[in-house]
Image (cartoon, rainbow, N blue to C red; front, side, top):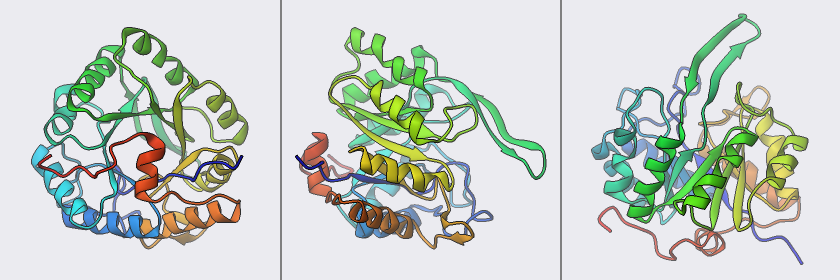
Length: 291
């Protein structure tokens, strides 16, 4: 029996990336909408989105998320996944746009961790903070997502984050099918590598869908591993700027195009948006901002 088609997700912008690092990073709702179009045309079925102010700084304004939703939806029926992850922002503020706009999916960080970037060249840490996600907050987000009819996409940066699902399943606030993103290569979380990915996938509960999220150029090795293991993949400028060492992507579409090519080269096909909805058990009709 052949593996199912690969669902490709694209993380369009992130919260920390800037145009000084990569000129293709979108900031405004219209720019994010255009990047969503490029990603969808290249083969992405899901777009993962953080909101920005026009100057590139992060925002949690539901009005900005609404404008992004409208810009994305005016261009395609791609599955929309909004972020809820942040540091130092109250939980209620981080989930307000989910409750109000009801996207098809929303990211849910599944545990606390040290979170940093280290420069071997400069011998310095950047973005050095504790990414706090206590069970109280996770449950609060889950209950809000359940009420809004939004699929939680559980972002797990380490093995313990997968284990954190057990009490939530027992409480009945986390319901199948489960949507996991296995994030690898963030300092403070599980290192990137196929051996670790095999362990992570083997730790998932029954009725789970999963994708790998690799940080930096490790992304491509992990994409290839996930494809051969029957999983799904995420690429995008939030996670990685480069098609290969020294060759920066000109858009999110460039990264999705490479991921789709890897799928085909390794004997799997890329799921269309409609096929992804069916594979993941999502509604077969795209939600609109007024739905």
